[in-house]
Image: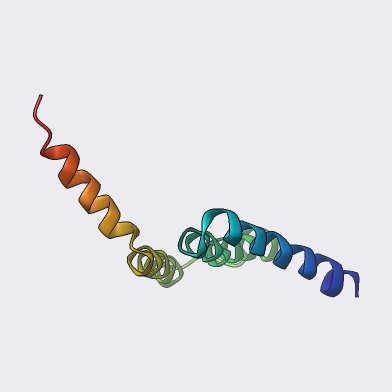
Length: 87
C-alpha cells in the first residue's frame, strides 16, 4: 500500500516537476532510461542474463527518442556550424 500510493505518487510528482523545468523533449529522453535501469536491475537482482536483443532493443529505443525529440538534428546543425567557422 505504501509503495503504490506514496512512492508512485512521489515519482510522478518529481517527473512532472522535471517536465516543467526542462521541457517535455528533454524529459522524454530520460524517462526512457527506465528500460536501461530495468535491464540492469533484472541482471543484478534477479540474475537474468542480458542478451544481444535486449541491448539492441535498448539502443533502438534511445535512438528513436533522440530522433523524435530533435536532438539528433540539433547535434548535426551544431556540428555543421562549428565546422564552418573560420579562424
